[in-house]
Image (tube, rainbow, N blue to C red; front, top):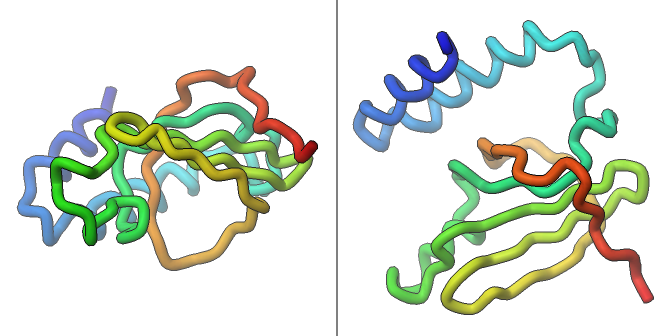
Length: 122
């Protein structure tokens, strides 16, 4: 539970330190990972709950607070290079997009369904 304590410590800091704190934890975890190419691993496949992000579009900062999604999820299929972003209440919007990895935004995710598959195009 060492990592849980580190995450809790980061969350106790003022918001300006969140990104730096999570980046430090992410680097430590990546260094311990036995998976050398994690972004190409099928371990990413499934449905994930978004815990934290720096992505302004996902945070919906241009919407009034009462119109922002309460929870966000992302389905990932590495083998088909597809991702599905899903909002919860109040709109339940979703979009399926090509999966690509880029630097810039930080995401902290929690696996909620490892068997979930992004629907294929019809």
